[in-house]
Structure formats: C-alpha cells, structure tokens
Image (cartoon, rainbow over all chains, first blue to last red; front, side):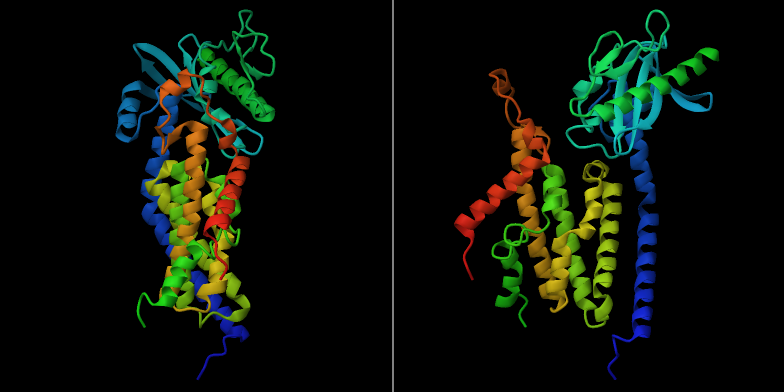
Length: 205
Length: 207
C-alpha cells in the first residue's frame, strides 16, 4: 500500500513528528553546550573590564589570571554593581554602564581614578550599531583612548563629561565618531547619567 | 553505482564553475558582502555554509519520498533552521570571538538562497550521496568567493591577513595608508563584481 502523502491527516502527523524530533534535538544541544557558552560569556566580560583598565591583548587563561590579580572586589553602590581594582598600587573603580545607541543597546565599562573624577580608561560595546560608523565605538581603540584623563566634573562642580561635535572644553569632552552622531549622543547620555549616579551614590556612602 | 561516477563528479564540480552559486547564479550575495571585511569570519562563514548545505541536502534527500508536497518548503526550512541553530550554538561554545563577529549572519544562513535553491532543485530529486556532493560543492564554491573577497579586503583595508600584519611598518613610514573604503560593504560588492567579471571572461564555458 502506498501512503497518500497529500492527505491532511498525513501532513499534520508528519509535521508534528518532525517538529517534536527537532525540538528534542535542539534542547539537547543547548543543554550540552550551555556550560561552555556561559564560561565564554563570563570570560568576555572579564576581558572587557580589563580593556577598560587599558590592559589589552590578553587571551584565555592569561586574561583570567590578570583579572584575578587586578580586580580586588565586587561591590554595590545604591544597588548598582561596580568593581574595585588595583593597578600599580593605585585604587581604580570600574563602572558598568548601559545605554541606548541608534539601533539597539550599548554598554560600557569605565574605569575611574581614586578621586572619582578622572577617567582612567574606557571600553564600549554595542549590540547592533552600523559597522564602520556606530560600531567604531567598540572597534576603534584610538577613540576609546581619547577618554583617558578626561574629568567627569568641571572645577566648579558641574557635570562636564560628554561626547560632542565641537569640543570646546578639552578637559572633559571627547570628539564624536564621524558619521555616527546618534550613537555618539547615546554614548554621551549613558556616560552622563550612569557616572553621575555612581559617583553620587559612592560619595554618600 | 560507483561512488565517483561521471554524474556524481559533475554534481560536485559544476557548482565550482558552471553553476557556481555566486558567480553563475548570483545567489547569497547579502551574506557574502557582510562577513568578508576580514578573512577569519569569511572562512568560518564559508565552512558553516558548506557543512549546513551538505547535511541539509543529505537529510532532505533521505526523507524526500515521505515529504508531503504541499508543505515541502516548510519541512526544508525546519531542517535548515535546526542545523543552523546547532552550528550557531557550537560556534558560541568553541569559537566565541568569531560568533560575536558573525553575529546575526549565522542565523541568516537559514534564509540564504543557496541552501533553499539546492534543497528544492537538487536534494528533492536525487539520492543522498549525490546530494551530499552537490551540497559540499556549492558550499565550497560560496566559501571560495568569501575567502578571495575577505583576503583582498583585509589586506588592503587593514594591512593584515588573519590578524597577522602583512604590510611592513616601513611602508607606513613612507606614507602608505590603509584603504578605509575596503572595510565598508560597498567595496565588497565591487570586488564580487570584479570576480564575476574575471570568471565570465576566462573560466566560463557555455554548456
């Protein structure tokens, strides 16, 4: 007897069985690989924190070791996580920030000196900014290095840090990424709001 | 039937020249433009497409007689989507950096016209072994272009290959500058155009 492969009941049973098989297969693969994927994500975050402390080019076990050496403590300020680090005997804070870019979320790790005002280093990440334009915030090391030494507050106590088109206050402001004004604005907002919250919270403690 | 009969050989070699998916049929251009700014993701993407095309072809070919005609595209999509998800998970576990670079494009293999084209045009009518060869041939044909374009773009755009610097520092001291245009997708389109041009002019023979 030849099955009528065009009957409705055959089609329904066929697709149901196919989908169940595929579902089990995918669930199995996901469960089996999950621990390794989690380890990769955790390592990636550690690397980003090291990048923000201007330690670049380390891989795998090297990065793990350096992270264990440099990052002393994970603490909270007003329910927000931050990292206390030590480089050459000097205390640094690393603040994780989140904001909005042009197409999706952006995030950053900013390391700040003990005076809670001078930026020591910065690393940015994004979900879906345009390659070559907005994505430069992550890809361009030169741009990230421009943040080193910038003051978050001006001398009269005003919030001064920012990413702007025409830099008028080079002590605190960084030049926009060309062709990515909206992403740069997102970075600017993220820095101003995030850093202000952290620093106010830390100073109250 | 011999494993490497004339027909089977053609199933493998045709997509490398006459029926080349990119050069002959101009399929799969979108991902070819997107992932070729450096060599490493281009190679990984080429391998991923080769593996997925080959195995999707085999699976569809094995079950080709049981697939209800009215939902055959759905069945093909389910098989491809399952394979793509598995490959993407494996990349995340074993090559995290590359999977971050490839980002959405691994997922977009599902909609790569090369795959659907081969499944519909070849695997639905042929036995598993020729289908496997056809899949590998098409995947390698696609990978070949990705590697050529990726190598040219990385060499001229960043002065390196696979992340190792090729153009010596001395050249930069003399005023040589990396071509930023090469890192943009638009140049990939022009390069693919040049490759198609060379292929048509020198290698393409009418059947």
